[in-house]
Image 1 (tube, helix red, strand yellow):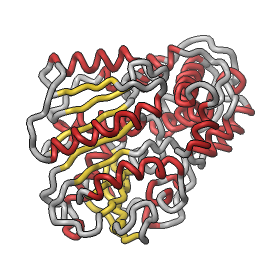
Image 2 (cartoon, helix red, strand yellow; image 1 turned 120 degrees about the vertical axis):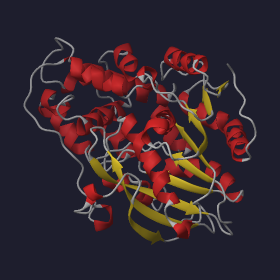
Image 3 (cartoon, helix red, strand yellow; image 1 turned 45 degrees about the vertical axis):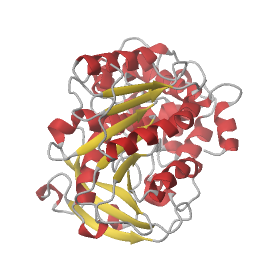
Length: 411
């Protein structure tokens, strides 16, 4: 993000705190109401047929390439070539979906040079917000990310940027993101023209992208056992969505928009179990409609200063067990599966955005189970700063995994 945008989001305190606290607030509020009347609102389809699922989608296996397109050069990545890849993946219910990833290939790329799958924090609801579109809009989130990504491009690495929210932009559906990440790596390795068939592969992501990265590492053994991954770096990732939802009530937040977006996104992926739209009043439905095709900045502006309380159709009366179950199913703390690859996990111990004890619990369980886990607590006072402060050690750790050095452990 640009400094100006960060000031808008943060105010005097951490904007990330307000954003994720707001996320917890709205989900908590929407979990508690009981009336019903409206259907989910999905994003408008991308008018470009490249992003559409083919009629024979079910005949393809996860990771199969559906289509490939060369894209124009991107100012953010001088000299690199850009390739858009459509592939078959799987949603949270086991059904086939079409997903996309954008591959950045550095100038002078050597065959089988390293591959980084970087999970960008997309935090959006509209098809215009896919990475392949945002690369050409000057999106401030990608501008900030570009500095780190150019570092690995300069070392000859290729980068895959998957749209890990899926075709319905199901913001908040973290396990879905992990599956799309793994299928994206499969697809990229299937394409001879990208010259990464035998490349060592590492994963990385922060915040929402960290959730997708963590899930990819945890389910890889069962979902994509044939993939050989060298390691995964997970930064500032919420490990327990249920705890986040319970920690905050329904008061106003300047970044309420992101909270509302997460509720909308989870409803899209779990329409029967988390029917958010059914519990909104007319004002709530209106703000949902205004956000339904928006990217991060528009979502923030639309929802600034809002609260779950003012958009609910009735006062909270009871919790919905199925909705709580959805949050648990997308919370890595509760997932019994273990990474079989080395993991680097970093966060600020004073990050007011995310439940730190949930991270500690997960780290302890993984350590006890023998995961090669290295942890890092960075001296940052708020969420977004921790991403920047932790970047140098993260890149060093990833490079060591590519070189095949023994993975250190903090356990």
